[in-house]
Image (tube, rainbow, N blue to C red; front, side, top):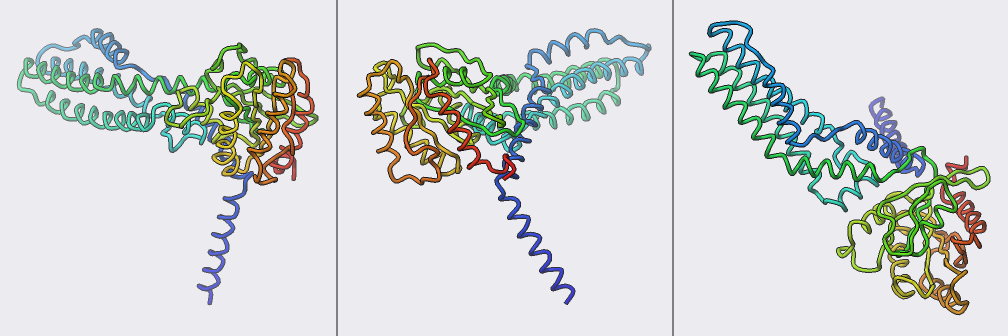
Amino acid sequence: MIRGVVASVGAVGALMAVQHEELPWLRRHREMLKLAETVKRLKETHVYSSEEIVRVVGERYRKVRPRRRGLPGRIEFELKRLEVVFNVSYSRLLRVARLPSTREMSEFHRALVLGFVGEEYDEALRAIRRSLRLIKEFWNQYRLLIVSAADAREAARLRKEGSGRILSVVRRLRKRLELLDRVRRELLQTHIVSEGLPIVVVAGIPSTGKSTLVRRASTAEPEVASYPFTTKTVIVGKTKVRDVAFYMVDTPGILERPLEQHNEIERKAFAALQSLPDVVLFLVDPSPEMVQDIEHQMRLLKDVYTGIIANRGAGLIVAVNKVDITPRERVERAVEAVNEALAGTSKTDLCASEPLLISALTGEGVDRLLDTVYQCLRVKTPWLFGG
């Protein structure tokens, strides 16, 4: 009887745990903590190059001096030199090994790394950790051999052999260390603040005016220019509408083409779109200077909807930008194209029944757009509004 009650209580507890696990606010809170922890670990970790490690070994190695005469003193001297090689190599690589694996990273950082270098990052980390074990084995093996050396010449030979094997391990890691350092620097450039605020990701093809809009509406100051791919990384600004603050994320432009053809910049944009947004603000460029025509932009919009919005449960707002420099008939055709592209989509995903008309450059329609974002966030992130 008691066993049955305990089993029932355990089952209920497990069920409640699963239900709590699925709560959106809990899942999001955990992801925000991971974002912050990932950035913290990246900032705290210096990735030493193999050349740096070998140089420091040489500098400290040359400073070691014998303290006693005779064979005991010589053995002590050779042991101390080998210890310097071990300590410098092991301690430097141990710090590198503390970098988070993609499994430990936030969803956003994981997507960035996998899009940036694929599985090579985790492979490099595993190689560092294997090398640490090997270096420790060499140290344990050769220090015993040196201690039991028959004479000074044998002790010196063993020290030289042991040091060479340890440094050979370090040198073989050169490309792995370079890759880890490159990824670390890249991730730190991609600045994501992790205060748990709602996130609005601005997306679209290159030169739709994303950076201009984010600069006008938030604290971010992205570079703005008239050529494609000005935004090389993900830029975050903070915006406040009424009593609610949220992040506005400027992403690099994405050309409508197969995923495998996307360049490094476009992969960053997809990483942000796949893992960050509570709301996606998709900008359409109907102007004569558009980088891709409306048909291609609508294909990209559909891809964003089916691949991200529908899967993630985020809100979608579509705005037709550059109305200040675009003939009216082109704007109307863009609106029709958007309505046609989104026909049949779930109304719960769309935060505006019609595309909003704006000019990020002049500010026309931007206040209404931000009000729509505010209303959308209230629906999509009620737990952040006390709902």
